[in-house]
Image (cartoon, rainbow, N blue to C red; front, side):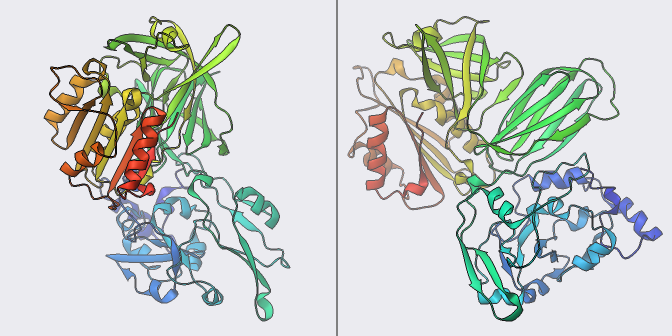
Length: 563
């Protein structure tokens, strides 16, 4: 959305020639797209750590300088300090609303502007009115949605904000719903309390709990750019939102399916002309999804085409796709890497999530879970979307079939599945990973994620990798090389059935072994900057979890990967 004419997004009393020329004062790098990128960079634009709370008018009045500027529009308080140099009308015009309720000033000029989408990353809280002081403390935290429902005796309607807004087409009009429909639309277990108020205030219904993050549809923004040969569409989902994306061409349309935390949202682009060779990438740090396509004809388009966005829906079932094997290579004496891509389109899974491979044998369907390995650990298969590390069990049902596949053959798989939430690592600086056998696969993505993050910087990644013998160790050489290149990464191999030549640690996971190894690295068990992940056979997982809890590690700092 260009938000109307971007040059008109300013709080000015009239369109003077001076105001019209203000848009020319924007420095290079201060355009709308630059603002969107800043908002998705992970920088805290709120200045208060992103914690939404009630703001008293007196507190709002204190933030009225260029170095510390807040304003309120329709009861929502925003920190506009970072936005000042991006404002097309100039910082001075925007400062007219600093430190106060600027609703009236805003509505005089631009009541149609979707300010909430433009400033969503700057939201500090909700402006307190006198009647609310009876119920709320200034430190209370609230969800982003409207907090107070009106009296049941009035005919007021609640606006459900359209969180999905784009930056290439005008914003959709907000939909008005009756109170009962509003509650149904939330689809949450919010607790409501009725409070009798004196006089004309009647009865207020008050949300007593926050909407759980997993029950809130994601907010998406998008933009696009082109060269004569290539079209790129970027979808911004927010830092650490951990999105997955599946893009494909269907009947001349580019279909982009975005999955975040159990929600599915579809973007449909009616392309101006035809494209081919889709590629989908995700930056997990920023939540940016990038879809690139090669133009069938080299030329500059007038636009990318008509874009429509579907409503978010909770995922209740997963689509089974046909994947084509691109290549296969040996990992160990009994495991192989299968590099695959969807037969149509391109896909990226959320970090730490897995697919389920489906196969019908003798009339019965069998399913097995596999977590894809990112390309750092298999740089040879650059043309594939997902890479599965498959261990062959001679008495198994699916693994003999999978490890016998050749390039060009098809595999059916569905996903993404998983419960891992990347935002839990927001404060993590040190990661501890306990893996056994093929349980190493979800850890590989976490290793590269941690070592490449910068907000905050990673201090250490400690991996304890359990196997039977030395020849069972997957990615042994790659781990050794990574440890030599980056001293923050430390891997300790523990073998349960080692040979005489093995000089490393021996044994199985136990209440004695784990504290002994952890003691060498001085782990702070109750530090919120540390996080531990576990993956392996069920017995290994159960024992590891109990040992960690016995050592005093809080469950909120542990994630167990279970297929």
